[in-house]
Amino acid sequence: MVSDVTTTQLIQDASDTGRQRITFAEDFTQFLNLLTLQLQNQDPLNPTDTDKLTDQITQFSQVEQQINTNQKLDDLLSLQLASLSSVGLGYVGLNASYLSADMAFDGETPITITYNLGEVAADSTINIYDETGELVYSERGETSIGQKKFVWDGRLDADGTEFAGEGTYTVSVDNVDPDGQTSRSQTVVTGIVRGIENQNGVVFLLIGERAVPISNVINASVPDTVADTAADNTTTEDDNSEPTEPDETDGGSDV
Image (cartoon, rainbow, N blue to C red; front, side, top):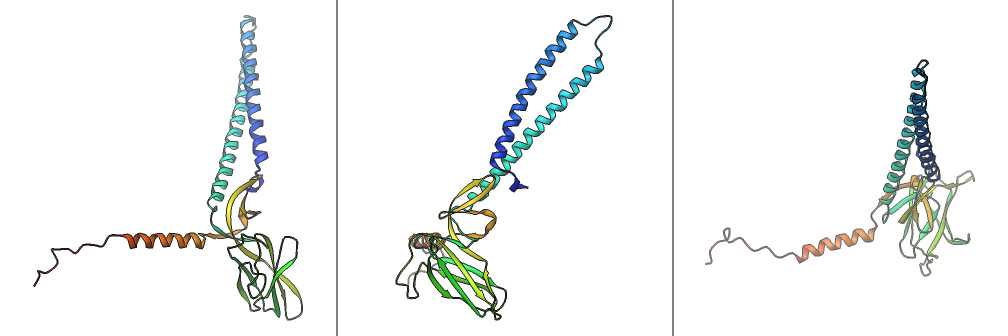
């Protein structure tokens, strides 16, 4: 499995294969030297048994094939890790939705929080905490069954007069069912991917100060600001286009 392959292991395996190749080359050279001396000094009346020579050469051939196989496996694993990194690079600059309770807030871009209620709740509360664990925002959530969305723009009060600064925040959606039992919903949050990181064969997306496993990503899209800019550029190009001159062949004569 891909997750079982680590960068450290890959480097160690490649190093071991290299040492095996060098050792094999030295042993085979020594074998050929000894074989040459043996053939030169053999008793003509009692020549060396060729069956033993054939067996020895066959064993060397098998060892060489095994080393070549190990080399090919090392190359395949390297390509596999490189492919995973390439996939991760495709997320850079996108707005990713991922399974997590931690949110990277840049001080400006609103964060969309998605969660699901499997049953009707008597009460539901969305709480947001800062890095010290202090509650900075709280709001009553919906209580009906189904998927819910809440957009947090960094406000610290209902009036929106105070806003949070840049940093990592944690969201908690706590629910109380009609029987008084409490539960916490799994949340999906959004954030801009600024880079990737490979930790022992596992690709992580860097979102804010957090490293998010790529397996936690639900979807990704072009940020609204980038999409709006692209749309504005298209409009500008259309506006700057030269007016089309009337086709004289189609027009009538002046009266």
